[in-house]
Length: 237
Image (cartoon, rainbow, N blue to C red; front, side):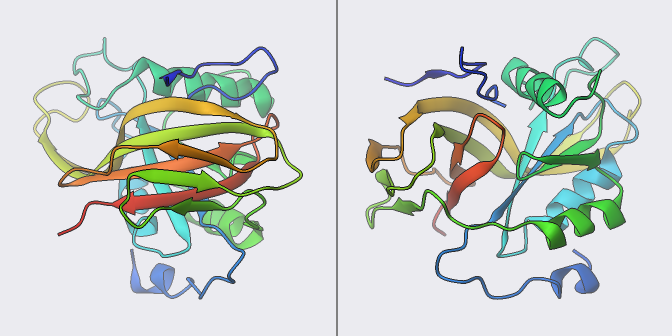
């Protein structure tokens, strides 16, 4: 049975384009996986829309798995973000401890669990993507019926996370710093759960396929934050 994943005793992480940008994508080797990009954002933050737009560009790249984690600590400042989740805040705080930051902030991007930067800093984000080495240590493969996922054998260990997200949502913000603005969120995380521990042996889990307009991602993440495996399914037309 799945459970909400915050921080395991072993220190695992909490359940936590422009034409130029798109041209940087290249065909991936067979053993590669997408680079996981996590944006910690809020509809109540006036600095976040440029980062949200950048995440939307990255989501169109075939070599990137882009996820928008909407935090909850902006909700009391005039506008409650409909995407905000305490689990997203917990995940960001776990990254702050892991990456040596004394505080959380928005917008923040975390690339492959190991590098962080201001989410609207295009140059820093693209540099981190260029430097990433997304080898599929623990390959993620979905069954043809989209109702199960298998994690291949490897020498690594970590936690298998299931992420459900809305591919696109448009919101007319009624109050707060972005009052009267219409915001578009891409791959906004709606649920984050742990499927189980990964100890290097092959595993298989039953999953619910994505419904219309939804996506499902599976991440295998080590105790140091490093992504060992990643894959995603999108709803069929």
